[in-house]
Image 1: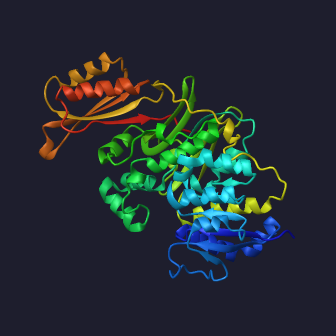
Image 2: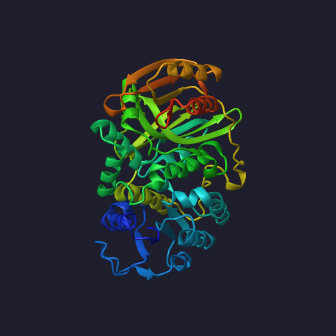
Image 3: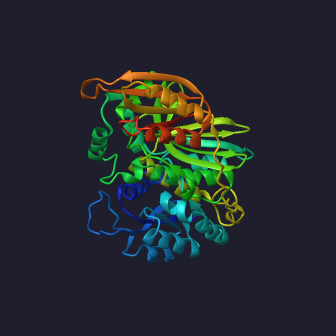
Length: 437
């Protein structure tokens, strides 16, 4: 049997502790699968005294994760510290430069420095594995990097944030407001005390930027993603979507166009009969459209200690199965030096159309003015629905418009015009309608 694979874990939060526990509890099974023992030989975390429910006394403790990354006592450096700078970046870079394999769950680090780190890994002939960085326990990285040879990807999209999906699912099922569900999600541990990173789309954008690089062979461009969150989604939007045969999901979408690559994160209406509309709660899903395979949908647990730990363990096991002299594949599916500069697509028509909700004064001429603004911007309407508003807002009406194919610029210009006309009593809502499998 080959020598044991020595693992150093930096970060002993929920995921790090779960990884250490699985490596201990599943040791015999992992040895049979990998042909060698996997042992935790080193640990780095901020608090030595904290009870993590597992005996780690046999591992050497390092206060500095960079020192652990450089030590000859480990073969694999597992980074679970988090953050795109500081100890996370310094320790991963140090490990790669020292010729250590690296496993990370850090999407923020990869979104910002992934290409540079990949160049180091490929130069040193070591692995940089990051399955846990995107969609938790779903093996989407392995699928795109290893199992789709010969396929040309045309579009990749999905539900990449469990917090947002949980909130939208409960808003629809229980008829409660965004704020109420968010507080519950925080209480249950599905949302952070400061949920901005999740609910405003940043987390999804980081994950999407990594998938974009894998799909299209471009350098990661997380800062070039159009982004909207879900904090402005109301019960009126949820109900209107249901009446029209749609369900609202926060999607990350990347697709190839004639003018470049389009990346966007925003609330989206998908047909209730589509597969992705059936993904509820904290579950994630990723759809990949290719010329040979067609559409592949992967779905499963997208967050949490066990799901993320499972992906980390899978990455460690892949390293354990490799042997000296084995030529490792490139980090992002193509050699890092051959990744093309990201070219942002030009604004174009959106085939799915748009949902527009307007709360307006209930008075003569408003409806005609709205229709004129749409016509002036060459927007064809598929349907128009008016709802009276009861109670104290009885002098208002809700107007719901569904457009045919048009451009984002045309829709925004029309809505801005309606706003300037003074007809609105509340902020307008614009949501894309997405073609989804």
